[in-house]
Every structure is written in C-alpha cells, then in structure tokens.
Length: 215
Image (tube, rainbow, N blue to C red; front, side, top):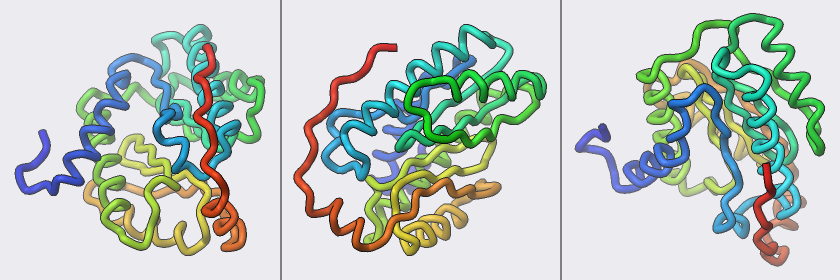
C-alpha cells in the first residue's frame, strides 16, 4: 500500500514500478525491457535499446528452460551490459546462468549478482518494488538529474543503478539512493561519459522507435 503522505510523483513512480514488476511472482523475471514511448528520452541508441530488449527476452527464455522453478533470476540489460540478480540454489547454477547469458548475441559484459540462497519471499519482492519506486521518484524530484538516463533495479534491499551518465550524475544519484529508507546497499553499474559526449547526445535528433524483437 502506498502511504497517504506520498507525493503524486512518488505514487506515479510506484505504480509504474508495480506494473513493470507483475512478473515478480513467477520464478524468473525479465527486467527493464525497452518501451517504445521512452526511446526519444533514452541515452542509448535505438539499436542498443532493441538489442537490450532482445537480450532480456532470449536470456529469460533460456534461463527458464535450463533452471525452471529452481531459481528466481532477473536479467536486465543496459547498452549490452547485463546484470543478473535474484537467487539460485547453488554455485553451479550461478555459473550456469552466467554461461547461458554470455552465449547470447550482442552481450558485451555480465555483472553476476546472483545470490546462492532460497528464493526471496513475496513480501521481500514487494518491498524491493517499493524501494525502486522511491528511488525513481527521488531522481525525478532532483531537478539537477535526468531520470531517463537511469535504470534502477532492487534485489533484497540492494539497489543497482545503471545508465550512461556523467561522473557528477553518477555521484548525485548514488547519494540520493543511499538516503532512501530500507536500502541496504547501492551498487553502481554505470557507463560514465564525458560532458562532450553528453552534449552530443542531447543535441542529436531523436531516434526512431525500434520494433520489439521476438524471444
């Protein structure tokens, strides 16, 4: 339940996070798939967004086939860098998941944050969704940051921040996330760019929305 004192922005962010996380009740979740409406405000190229969505869809399918209900794995790709979060039953399953994803087309690198432990409870996953919503809302409230540059993933109270950002933006977002209640730790998986690159991105023509790939 969203607290009564929550701001409208927080309520919107939480609603969006909940909608994006409905699949969290099943053993394997696809995280952060690109949305066509957001293409124009994303710092990735349209091609990279399309490839990220394809990586998530194909990776989710292959992980489900290999590990089934034995694991709860979130796969999130940003600019071809893949983050694996969730729980697996043993170290062998953790390494197997990484090998499966590393074999996918277009994957540039993998950050394997899978925990060898029992699957998180529904209460814990719901709390993670709430934390993600609060972090996103706080990034929106920060007038000196551009929320579209960030992707936020939360697992067991650990917040992972992804995106193409400047060093100042990275430090500012990290500071904001660390101040959110129930956040255990903040892990940065940023692609840091210079101010010249940021200016180039901001002045280039908006890309054409890509067509979603098939799993």
